[in-house]
Every structure is written in C-alpha cells, then in structure tokens.
Image (cartoon, rainbow, N blue to C red; front, side):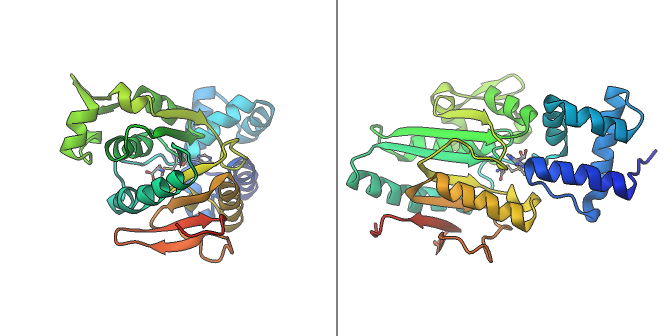
Length: 276
Ligand SMILES: C[S@@+](CC[C@H](N)C(=O)[O-])C[C@H]1O[C@@H](n2cnc3c(N)ncnc32)[C@H](O)[C@@H]1O
C-alpha cells in the first residue's frame, strides 16, 4: 500500500532534513521521502508519522539513521574517468610543483561525500601509482551515511562493483577473494574514513585537492553556496576542486577559478598571489 504524507507532515520532515543536512526534498521527489519514512516506521513499529517526528527530535542517533535512509549512495570506481585523467595529468603535476617550491612533501586529498569508498580508493590508486615514493599521501573519505562508511572501511567489493577498475589496477591493488575483491593494505593505509556532515565545518584544513562530486546536487542553492564556501576555507592556498559533471558553481560568486583541461573541467583556488 502506498504511503502518503499530508502537506504539513511533508513540510515538517523536509524542513528538518534540510536543516540537518542541506538535502532538499521538493514536491517532485516527495514519494522517495514517503517510502523511506514508511519503511522506517514499520521497523520501529510506530503508527503515526507525527509520533516518529517527536521521537526523532529527541534522539540524535535516530536523526543519523533517517539521514542515512534519505541519501542516494550511487557511486562507482573511476566515475567520470575524465576527472581522474585531469587529476593525474594536470592536478597532481601542479600540486607536486607547488610542494617542491614550498618544501613540503605531504599531499592531502578529501573525498567529501565518498559513499561506499570507490572514489577515495580510485584516488589512492592513481596517487600511489603516479607519485614518487617520498611524497606522503593522506586521503580522507567522509560521508553522513554510516552504512556506506562501513562498506568503505571494509574495502571489499563484489565482482559486479569492480568492472570499471582498469585491469592493471585491479591486479595490482586488489586481492581476489571467493566472492569479490579486497582492496590491499597499501591502498587502504592511504585512506581514512570519517563521519562528517557537509552542513557543518569538517575540522579538516589545508586540503590540496577536494572531490565533492554528485553531492551538492541534492542541496538547494543556499545550502550549495554555504557548503562550497566552507570547502573553500578548508582548502590549502593552492588547491583544486572537482564537482560532479552535472553540478556547477555558476552564480555562487566564489573565488575559485574555473579551469578547462583537455580531460575535464575543474576549479582552482590560488590565494598565494603567485602562478605555478
Ligand atoms: C551520489 S553519492 C556520490 C558519491 C561519490 N562522490 C561519487 O561521485 O560517486 C552522494 C553521497 O553524498 C552523501 N551526502 C549527502 N548529503 C551529505 C551531507 N550533508 N554531508 C555528507 N555527505 C552527504 C550521501 O550520503 C552519498 O553517499
């Protein structure tokens, strides 16, 4: 049986979710919210959605569960491969030059909204493969979906999830198990995973590269602008940002410079006053 929210109930829940995460439910995707709430009420054996609302505002853990339920966690290894080409052939080269000039050999990358880990592990494989060994690689994958973070941390993917990994990387950086592939420790050791809600400050700083792809697409314009502003402040003075290819910073009036490479478009922060 289909489950319908009254307009008042829909507004109550969509406002709460927006305030807690930036995720915007419009009337167009109202049925997704309805079906996720219906499932949760059934599990908790709560009949009335208004009783669930009261329960929710008193229990922070339940709020986390609800946010997890309303997220879309679709991802894959090397998603939008042009980004990985631009990362390898343009961004890493520029960052290494900058690091050399500033006598620093530590590169920090943030995969913000990393879902089940395919994005940060793809980044780690490229960095491991392309960077000289004296460079310290530190990648942070963050998300507000606890279920996704558990999968990320496990680093195990069934056969049908590894089809986008180039053969060379799959052989070198994964161990074949009976029912899938396990990311090897040399890659897992480069990546740490954290619970983080992009609605709030991350506590991260000096990020050299940020991937925040296919995340702000679920936010409204105000939450997108606030998130991008926070990310900008958390980036190093010379750094790069990748967003999803159906996302844009157009109209946000940021200090990022739009860059078009042979492989993909991306954004650069440069508050050093110098060109590299
Ligand atoms: C569609 S996935 C994108 C995964 C990956 N970045 C990619 O492009 O393949 C979007 C992810 O953003 C996360 N997300 C949504 N809102 C968030 C928020 N406010 N804070 C942190 N993560 C969020 C979701 O949990 C989900 O895992």
